[in-house]
Image (cartoon, rainbow, N blue to C red; front, top):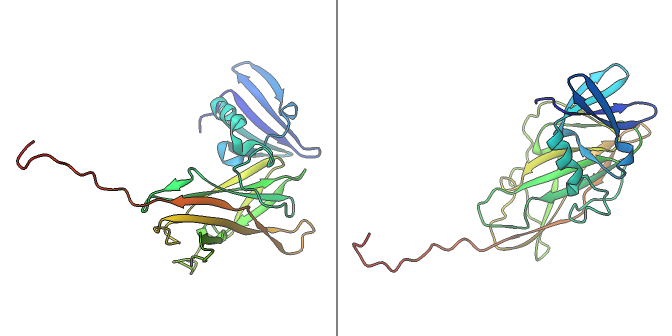
Length: 230
């Protein structure tokens, strides 16, 4: 990623989140603490580990877009975020890019894991879809089974440090796992496990419920052109 104009710094004890405007010979700090209730997605910027300092770089356009995005807002203002209840300093969101799909269209769930605590938290996952089990109900409340319930060999545990007031994004295709070709509405939730704050074991965390609708198949246009016409 090209590094330009802005950098975001995470400083431990106390946690401060700041952005800096970079020019060739001039640094002008902007304290994001004045921009209250903002949660940035870690995937939007490039992280670096520096002794005693968590630092990341983000392009100015990406930062401006992130500050305007609904997903960066507090849960109470992100009304379509389908945020679940807090657990161990995290909250989980489930959303789709649109509310309606035609049969056969890719259906990608966007899962956000947000750190709402005042310290860095560690999340570990296997790098596969099966780290995020879904519950899918049709409009008659029948649960749709996972078509691929057996987890393949993962990539091993992937450590994802998640800094205070940031969130991690995970994109997961649902259509390979569930038969969602029939027209109608579907209610979907997702869950995962996060470390307990006391350091002993794991706790389950769940999203709120997202709703999507599958439409009737697109009709094939009929033509009334006479035979042989072009």
